[in-house]
Image: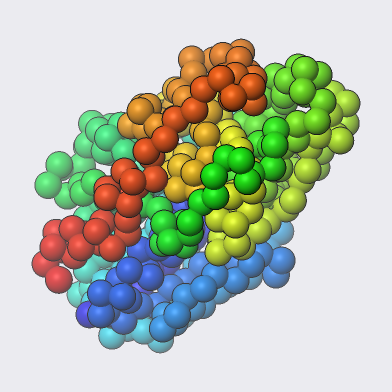
Length: 362
């Protein structure tokens, strides 16, 4: 069968990583795959062997950007009109309008919802438009996939989608991380922390900077590597200077997904933090999974699906407790193991896609 997968937004987000992993495994299961996403010139190109990879440009003006992307995705659909399935990532106009047309010409259409995307916008026109599309599009799809229990419940209860049309498709870990052999703690850089995220509207990193300031006062040789880019990167760099921790903060920009395991492997602790909100409650933390796969000690707050990994990570109730835990780890007073084995058993993409293909009858 031929799958057309269309991602509407940035190629460097966790959502894009999820969707690309799905594309890779569909191809490995013997299906023809066309993968479409939007990519800035500086963004690393993904490794997608034996997959037709197409990109549309990212423009500065939002509405022109959406219009060009929508037209491009229609063009791709017409060019690959022999596809059996049109699979959209997120309920966005630039991929869902082409998906609805695909439905009219007899294609099966699926959508993966991995976020309450409208929740990242402040109240106003952008949020209202985003929420309108979020509520309008999903009901028209044959199948909706999602990756957390809370998001599954939200789709059924709030969007009024019948449960038979919603499928839990777990958030897996890229094979690059599971194939990578972590080093022991003694071989990692001492007093090292890593934070990986898209530094845009979905990142709440600034909330923990004051905590890091206090931590670096007690551990002046410690440092944090901040991987990722986005519209808040310059603000975060300025904030580190205001708090006088710029010498402890290394902003590394975007790193290709294939090179992340090696970089993570150099560090002792991985940090993940999300503010308390309905939007964040519905998220699945890809980074917690990736940190665990690389053998790091992981500290996070109780948001998203962190609770699922409580046996392997430190789930703290607030930022101050995250600081205490960080200090204890640096003093070699605590450690957790075993998370990597759980990921290999339950969160590998080949296993996840096996179940998905059985669900859709392929």
